Image (cartoon, rainbow, N blue to C red):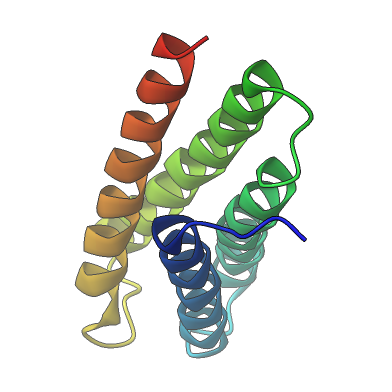
Length: 122
C-alpha cells in the first residue's frame, strides 16, 4: 500500500475538520427560509471541497490530480461566498464565522500552491 505524505494527511484532516465545523455552524443558523437556503449551499460547498480532495488523492495522473485540486478550490471559493453573504446579512450566530473565513482562506492558499507546484512538475 502506498503511503500518504504527512502534509497530505494534515490537509485531508483539516478539510474534514472544516466540513464538520461548517455542519455544526449551519445547525445554529436562524430558521428562516433564506437561512436554510444559505446553510444548505454552505454545507454542500464546504463538504464537497473535502470530498474532492479525497478523490484527488486517488488521481490517475498529475494532470488528473491538478484538475481535482482545482475542483476543491472551486468549492472552497463558493464556501467563501456563502460565508461572506452570512456576514454581510448579519446572520452570524456567534464568533465562529471569522474563524471559518480564516480557515477557508488558508485552505485556498494551500490548494493554490499545490496546483501551481503540480502543474509546474508536469
